[in-house]
Length: 343
Ligand code: SAM
Ligand code: SF4
Image (cartoon, rainbow, N blue to C red; front, side, top):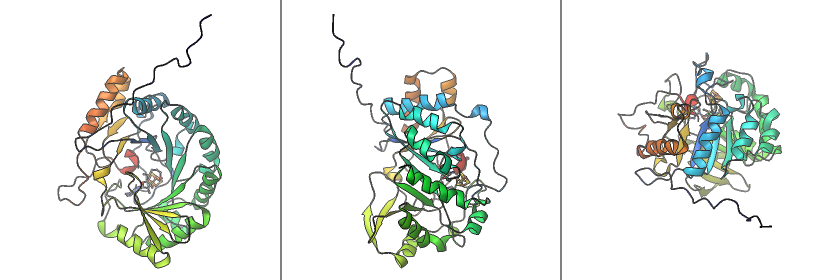
């Protein structure tokens, strides 16, 4: 009787890098799973919400899995972040995570969430193969949280953070967008809370990506100001930037806590950007600020094979511009707000 060979498939050659014309290699994919949200953060969307995408326009689980498989197998994507809107609103999320975790090669899988419902789902998500989570939290004061998000849900978010940590979705990061006169007096307090509970705080400059078009540079708290506020309470030891990550990092002296500052506006990191974005309705974007998209959903639903999807993807990245130019007089806001692109 002949013996079965030990390996039944030939080793797959590593895919050609997903390169743009400035030599940037793209390895990080952000997938928006829905544009809907159960909060209404004032710097993100209006009180009445937005015109949500019709359900039929949103990619199905099968379609998301197919595109992520193309991305990891043919395009060299190594990390996938699930976002939205609020990704925990996606029905059956642990099942989708399990399917994405089974991709070959498997990406590192993370999630950005407002934390509502995370207390219920963190363990199932970790079990399904999710590695890490970022939870958005702009204030520790219940009345302020209710005003800022227009929903009285602070306790749910804090429960969600704890559940994520207990489920081993580490490091659990807290994303804060400070806004002048709203929550900028809590920067050090939020960092102290993170130190106390074993989370990693990150502060993000607000960007002109709100749906209302009300962004005001004067209300944006700059990275320098964030560092000043932190410096009043803590000694900070520079750590630098890990890889192409957008956050510059400092260790809070006397602790293991690393604090990150994402200065998208005042210290843009476009030169080392390695990100590509897929919207919930299957549009591929080469930048958060892109004004053009590539319709992968139409290709998918039109019966395109993987080679055609790969070619469309490479073509989109080839057209990526050098940077967002927020400070240029020619700056144009993208048509979609952050919540519809996937933050
Ligand atoms: N709903 C989830 C959440 O809030 O984490 C995921 C989507 S949300 C759009 C992703 C991140 O974008 C959040 O950390 C949020 O604070 C941030 N964000 C929203 N609008 C922003 C803006 N105008 N400028 C900077 N960050 C913003
Ligand atoms: Fe929803 Fe996130 Fe936007 Fe807040 S920031 S309204 S949680 S999508």
